[in-house]
Picture 1 (cartoon, rainbow, N blue to C red):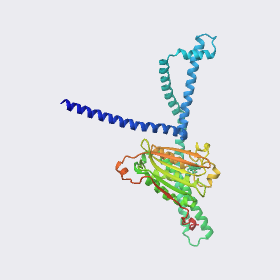
Picture 2 (picture 1 turned 45 degrees about the vertical axis):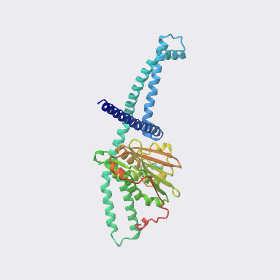
Picture 3 (picture 1 turned 180 degrees about the horizontal axis):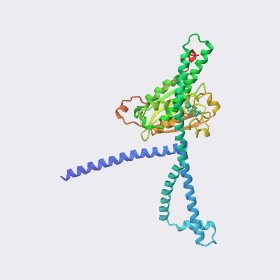
Picture 4 (picture 1 turned 120 degrees about the vertical axis):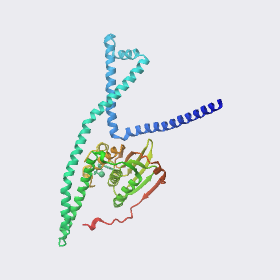
Length: 387
Ligand SMILES: Nc1ncnc2c1ncn2[C@@H]1O[C@H](COP(=O)(O)OP(=O)(O)O)[C@@H](O)[C@H]1O
Ligand SMILES: [Mg+2]
């Protein structure tokens, strides 16, 4: 009997010890992840930085007021003959260590709470303005779509006429191209509008590798036209919880930007997908392109913002791509960070919460496969057949 109890005790002890070890190991990884993520975010995540700034500023203000009040009190009650330095020294010597600790804790707690509330209130007008702006954009886009498609159909009907003069035909074909570009913009605007009603978007487990492959397949022609080398690196577990259409659009917009804003000849675009700590899958897109200035980097996620307008106009586009990407990432409860050095290149990192299908993950046998695609010899069937 005693032996049995001892055996049970021993088993209990071992299992408790094992679970503690397991938890410790997991927390240790988590801890390292949190610290490095904090440092990383502080360096590159602009949204994070602005909120932190508000809180830090508030900390500074409260601390200053706190010190000022106690010094003034001392100065008042301990005799006006003292010098200011004396008063500060006396204030500090009056407080004993325990009091100091408790005061510091209360101070930290209240200040953080106030900081958070103030940051929240301060940023509210900006959030509201952005929401109504999106609503307005969506309404306009919706109204423009019908007349545009009528114009396009009319032109296409006119093009069916065989006796059409060749110059006129070219002009009409040019118009159809421009209309296609305009409907691209309108579609982007409507996506923004859909994002205002996220409950309409369906979520499932999506293989991010497959989604990115689909986007890359559509962009390979563009990369070839610009002589840019596209490469893909994949990690092991790439199932995220999301909407495949939305994720493909996000990947398309980002990779397209990387290709468009990388000058011709010798440019590279490297795409990498891999899991990171704390249950997220990271999509990293690095280009060796023209980069974005520090000033512009703060604004590129705003609707219609385009860095260096004259240069950007030559590349087409509308300044909505990144706005949509950031909205899509937010919708997936993910994060996006952008790091850029002018004339050297840009790195965009999107991290998305992992999906929950273990059997799919174990079936995925592609481990660290590196695929480099060189499009330099590829002959693209020219669009000029249209013109
Ligand atoms: N990879 C990149 N390299 C350099 N500049 C970029 C990159 N991605 C985006 N940008 C800049 O950010 C701006 C906004 O991008 P985006 O919202 O996709 O709009 P668009 O591409 O339609 O201009 C672009 O006009 C461009 O100046
Ligand atoms: Mg773009």
